[in-house]
View 1 (cartoon, rainbow, N blue to C red):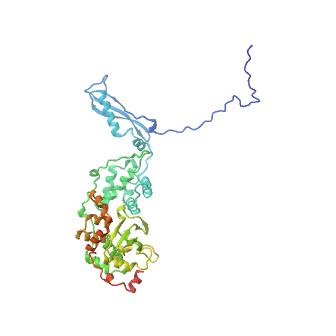
View 2: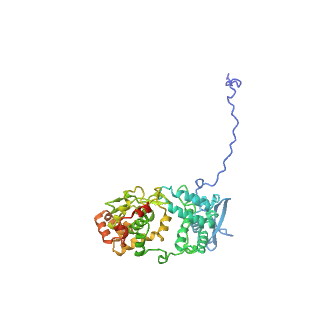
View 3: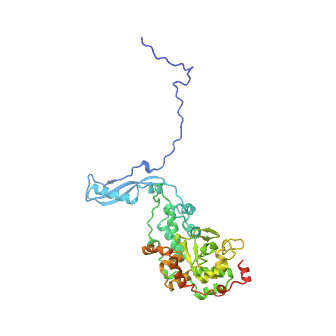
Length: 422
């Protein structure tokens, strides 16, 4: 006689065999995802045809993503001899349009980010990015271009719509505003960089663009028409001999070495070697803050003529910190220096380059002294010459300054001049 299996007493085991009611969880709505798609090749057809007709036009259809959903698109493929040829044409079209790419999916389904929003994100990333962080002066210039011209013109456009038509509108606006060709070209780079800054997780551009410079009307820069102010020898002599002592030394140093204004304002007595005959450039000043020089090539050694070295030696005695500083020890401001000179101080740097050219100094040595990068393989091969101090000194003595210091080079400054320089 079979015995039925014992049933547990539910009073002793109240939860035995009883399932708790299922908990309802809100299902998350899944958006478009390329990982759930294998791509599409589309389909081809002919109108009013039972079998394939080699003489009838063929059509292709495929799906396209939009923010509101997927929509079917139909295109004309023309006359195709076989169905296989029609399918191949359709695949080529889909590939060219990037319909199956992740970048296209993101750009067509995400909510419309405006150019203004992405520009803010892009600007914030420039100084801290790992590869080639951008200098503060460059960021300042790009931010000015955004605030003054770009954002008022195209800032509220959806980023996906910023293409050649938007760039054309911006260029026309800047040209009407009277900007120079060089400035327009420089400012036109900013919207390109902002659009290109949006990338997928794989680093592919979400909004790839093929910029048409002819269509947008990007001006062609004529180097002969660019404004490059320089100064004459008489003007340099005037600045070196009839300015306040502090500025006279500063102007003489720039005109006699080719330093950039930021590099000159960052000079300290400890940067000189060989009795002030060699200056080691390793820092720069921008908006009162110390930073690295403009480019890697700007970190260099500059040989100084004895006449200028004697002047700087006298000026540097007893000074600590920056040589050209305020009473509080902060470096002089760029604007104060330009105001004291009455001309753009960069013109003194051009004067030094002209002086070196007239003296026939080798181009590689000129590039070293003014801080320009090598331009050819030959320049790279000859880089070892920059370590030949005797050869550099020979050329430095042969060239000289190209102007006369006179008053301060032969005579020490008077007590009044020292008081003015303090």
